[in-house]
Amino acid sequence: MNEKPDRRTLYTRAAIKDAFLDLVAKGGWRRLSVTLLCRKANIARATFYLHYANLDEVLTDVLIDAFQIRECNLLSYFKQLRQSMDAGPLTAETFFPLCQRAAESPKYRALLLDPDLPGPILAFLYDIAKDSMVPVIMHYASLSRPEAEVLFRFLLQGSFAVNTALGWEQNDRWYAMQDLILRFKVGGLEALQKRKA
Image 1 (cartoon, rainbow, N blue to C red):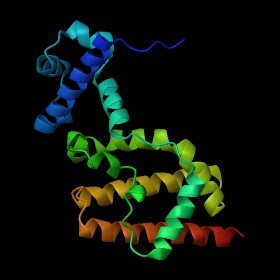
Image 2: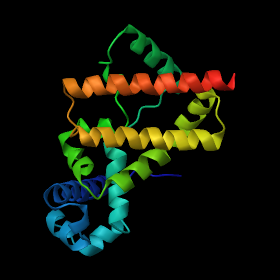
Image 3: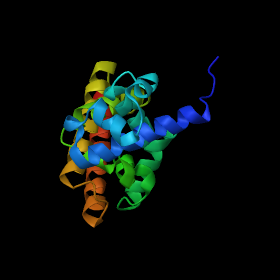
Image 4: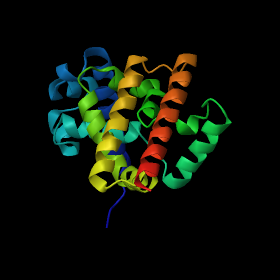
């Protein structure tokens, strides 16, 4: 039976994660150490190790917070996306790329801007979303699981690269590019579906 963490545990973990985010923003992931993190969070190393085995675990915990993903029916999502695209340029926040969701919060933006974190972030996003997205791509594009996994990885990494190139700024150019990319993605999936039919 999973017990809820007590208030002190929640407070300490929040202090560690806040210190982690501040240090990444100021000096980057590569320069981060447990010693620096403990100093910034004003905790002892032993306290750190009561909560986390290493900095990678802190990063994972921070990413879980940053990329809160609502449970939704992804087939319905694609239907809504198609209807939105048919209606005109994309503006609904519902259709933001997964990687953009953390960029909305100034608290997590430094993670996306750090040049050493795209690999771990993309691996995290792939792992949490593949069980939902791969079956949808398989169904929607009539692909095998290995084909859908490769395509999902390509779509995820492509969205991340475009957002990075655009500086993670949601402005008119960003919306125009998202509209273009989403039309390209859906058109490509539809072409694959027709090819297999």
